[in-house]
Amino acid sequence: MTEVPRNPHLVLAAALLLPGSGHVLLGLPTRGLIFLFFMVVLGVASLNLMPADSNFIVRHIGGIFVYGLSVIDAYKIARIRFETWRHGATANKDSSVK
Image (cartoon, rainbow, N blue to C red; front, side, top):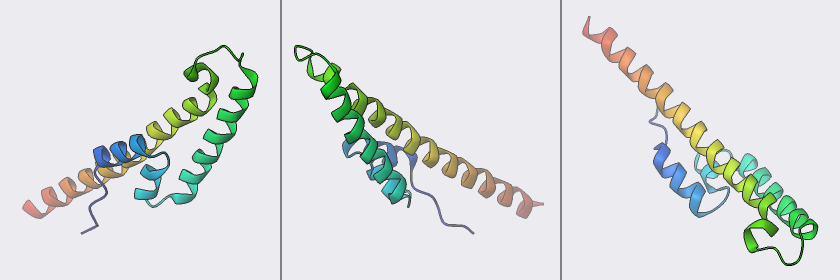
């Protein structure tokens, strides 16, 4: 029997609390670091491009956008792994009943 993958909701919570940590929980630290790198780069780029009188969200929108993509990506990977495992476990259970 294969190992149970991480709970997708745990990965989602980790990704929301600390950028890149969801990918680390999934065993993809390089992917998490890449997302973190682009959060910083696009955050700084948008900070320098937006008008000085803009609010915090608008001035850092590049980094916030990549942060949102990172959270969605980590959850999607975790969910696919979990559902694939669950489907395989159900198929194995059905074949052993016959």
